Image (tube, rainbow, N blue to C red; front, side, top):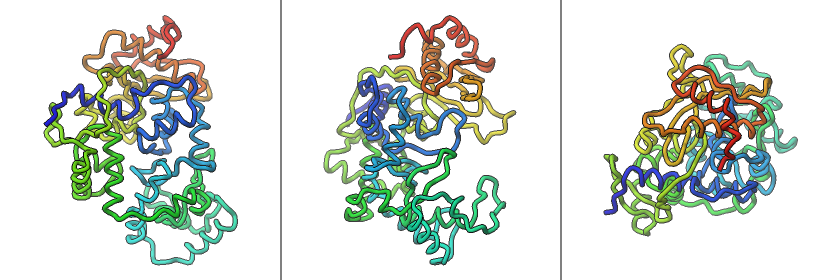
Length: 407
């Protein structure tokens, strides 16, 4: 059986995620399609303290790009991407729609995800008819005026909003896009998805699981069963094992041993076993490289927890902390905030990881200047928190961020 060192497995994982792909001087739709083929999905999240979650993984792989590319891919015909509950809420390639039929059937059988609705309500029929007539609409526009539930913080949804969410989960509606204020636009699937996707035969549930595990394996490069299960959030490992057995039989997966891993692992046949990774970028908390925290620890020795919901006084690193990937290692983490009114990228805290190489502050300075430029911010200001804060301030003051153009 093939054995991989931790460093080899780490480079395989980064190559599978697109960090060895050649850079394009000006990213195009082809660049975006290539990046999404690597990540499989782009997680969507409403937090906008720096940039929306689905924009950042593309930046990490493509460098500064025109975000209208993503708008065109997800909101204009012919669509390349559609929003669905693929990992959690995420943009996924439209071709993945048939492999999500089991998920749509599951939500239909249980009548929702969080809120269980009664069978076949008049409100469902009324909302579908209204959308059919008026086109893509937000929940606010369609709200039936019923009192909103205030029982749970953060989930202040009207009855119409709950029904719309259900209709989207079961595929009776699709998400056509989002407004500037991030409100979902609901529309009929036939006005969102390509006809060939909607008319494609529905695979068996086993074949749907097989396709999701196949895609997860390709995006991971090397993975354990829990890694493969988590990527598209299959509920149980017994839904993954049969798919892995098929992929081993067909030669798409090869069993491997990985140094320091106490579980069986599999290497995808197309995985690139890179000898070197030359990445220099910041990773969103919702980037596939780090969203499975145990995997990130095994590959990078990087313990990571997002602290958005931790009371401010109890946070260790900060509110919105991004890992800094340099080469094939995560060497630092920075708390970031885009102060758009002031035109400043604020860095309340910067922290070096154990063993961070000499020059980390200078490399991070260059990356922050590049990120600020992409966000349309004119300046980077570093606070005082963290052992990397002073060296980072010094590097920026020395003009290092502009002295060596990002690679």
